[in-house]
Every structure is written in C-alpha cells, then in structure tokens.
Image (cartoon, rainbow, N blue to C red; front, side, top):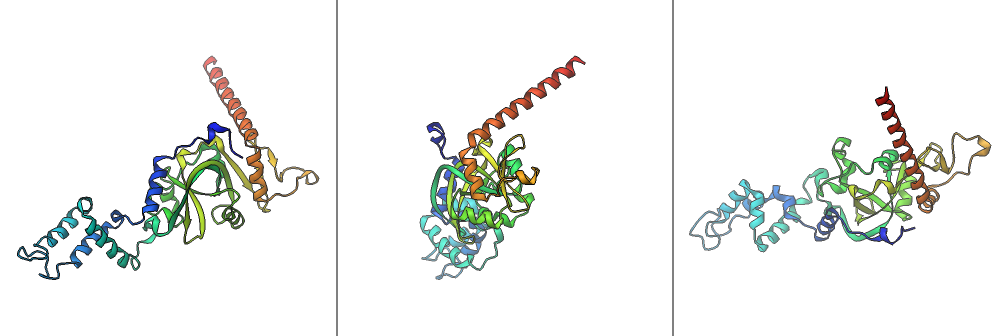
Amino acid sequence: MPYHSAHRLFAYSPEQGMLMRYLREGFDPYDYECLLEDWLQEHACEECGSGDDPDCDSCGGKLKAKADAAADDPLSWLDGASEGDLERFREYVEQRVGGMDMGADRPAYEHMSFSRLVRPTWLVHFTDDPESIQSDGFQYGWDSTKGLALTTHFTDNARKRGPGFNFAFVLGSRDADRAASSGKYGKEAVVFWAGGVEAYHYGDEEDQVIFWGPEVDPSRIFAVRHDDDNDWYVEDASGRVVFGVDRYAPYDERAEAKDFDEAAKWVVGNHRMLSGVRERAEKARRERQRARQVAARLR
C-alpha cells in the first residue's frame, strides 16, 4: 500500500546510482590491480624477449618500463592505460581469476547481476535485532562494492563498522517468503518503505534488493516479531501486541497464530496507526524528560 503522492517522489541516492552502474558494467580493472604487474611481466615482447630493448621494432623498449611503472603506481598506470591495454588486461584477468583465492573480497559483479531499479515499495529485511533497527534505523551496512555479495562471510566487527549497503526482499516475493521460513538471514524482520537496486545473486539463487541504509527513514520501519512457537506478531510502540499471539494473555483469550505473510500484510495496512502510536509515545517520552529537567533545576 503506497503512501500519498508526495511519498512516491524518489531520487536515487548517489550510492545506489554508483552500485547500479558498477553491476551493469561488470569488469573493473581497478579491482584487479594486484594482477597488473604480473600481466605486464608475463606479456614481455615476443620479439626481443625482454621488453626493454630500445632497438626493438615491436615494443621500442617500453614494455619493461610499463611493468616498472605499474609496480610503483598501479592506479596511475591504469588511469592512463589505452583501451587496447585495458581490453588485453581484462582477457588476462578472466583467465587468471577463476583459479585465484580472493576469498570474500571478490567484486560483487562476479556473484550477482543487475536486474532493475526498484522504485519505493514495501521491502523486508530479516534480522535478529528488529527493535534497534525500528528505533534507530539501519546504522550498520557494507560501505564498499568489494565483498558486497558475500557480507555474511565476514565477522560482525567487519560488518558493523558504520552505515552502508543492506539487503532486503520485495515484500510478498517468493524469496521473501522462503527467507521467512528458513530464518537463514535472521529469525525476525523489519518491514519498511524504500527503493533500491535489485540484483540476482548466483550463489543464493535469489532476487535481492540492495539499498543504502542511511536513506531509509526510521519512522517508516516496522518490526515484525517471531516467537519460539514459530508464530509471527506485531507490537506497537507501547509494547502491546496488536496483531498475532500475545504470549502473556490468558490462554483462552489468545488470538489465532499468524504466519509471516499475514503479519507483514497487517503492518502494511496499519502503518499509519503504528506510526501514530510511535509519535505519541515519543512525545510523552520528551514531556517526561522535560519534567525531570525542570524538577532537577527546582531542587
């Protein structure tokens, strides 16, 4: 259920635009600067054999200098490389990279392909800490395209250095329902309104939406909770269960158990009510805080 027209206006963040271009264009020579010196050394001139013979009609003695320059400053060499050099380097990388152990630092485009830009819609992110995300927004994410496709391979210390890219699914999609059932990304969830870059992840075999965390307004993030009995439920800002099973209610007064899809749809249909309760709770909290400050000054 979309918001009114003002909320449908959307400008993609620079980070999302960069990610879209990165995935669409594919090979980026700067991701493989570690191979540049090897490539130049291995492709010494076939005529003179060394690449530094000034009398060679083929290389003019410049190939060895290229290798030396690449070793000293690979980024500057890439900045000035010709289209022909870059194309030959790309072919060399494609031959070498399959057998290389780059670990989780492989470029994202090796693991996923760009599908489409997703206009603002309801998304779902699975997590084991929905309350803090609902309260504070997406404070942590992956801030680089390198390693982006394999963030689950890194430690929490690496993944929680600051804000960045995060992953979600379009709410109601087959992949979202599967993730809810498996719990592989988290036992609980947050449903939120945002857009992003959808990419197909080869290893996970999923259509995943990558979004820039700081762009998501925390006031439009809603926690969907999950209990030990495999029931999904929703609480308002006061902590009252407003949808699903309330474990603390008398047994004969408990609502019928709900699945994830039912709980998520309820959030979409009642997000304005949930936001209103949250705003009133926040207003009451500020008033109590001011009252304590006034009382402290009067002592």
